[in-house]
Amino acid sequence: MRRIASILGLIAILAFATNAQFSRGLGTLSGSVLDERGKPVANASVTIQTSDGRSPHAAHTDVNGHFEFTRFEAGQYDVRAYSHSLFSDWSKRVVVRPKKTTEITLQLSPTAK
Image (cartoon, rainbow, N blue to C red; front, side):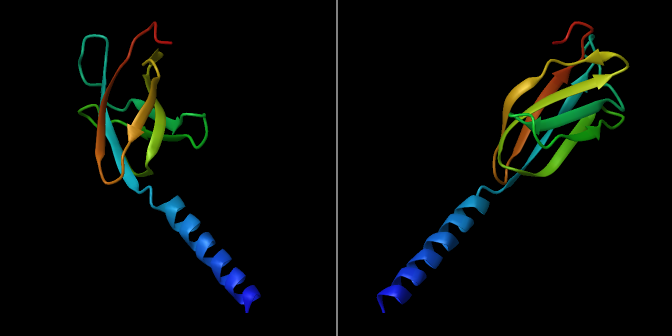
């Protein structure tokens, strides 16, 4: 009887831990890429990765310089854009929240780090 109770307790703990792991939720990161003069940049590449450098993803801006990453696990990400040898600085630790949209603007520069 004690063994069955222990096993059921272990199953309950595992089920709770698994549920907590996936309860972070999904969010959206969107924004714009601008050139040095503040004009939207069409077809710029935008890279997003976890803040520890894993799981990189890429997208391109539309004709209005807009991009969007949907259905991303809530957490912190680093984001950068580039186009024609111009780069933006890395936007570090951008927070994506569950069921929310985070907006950022990336500006290209010949001297970005």
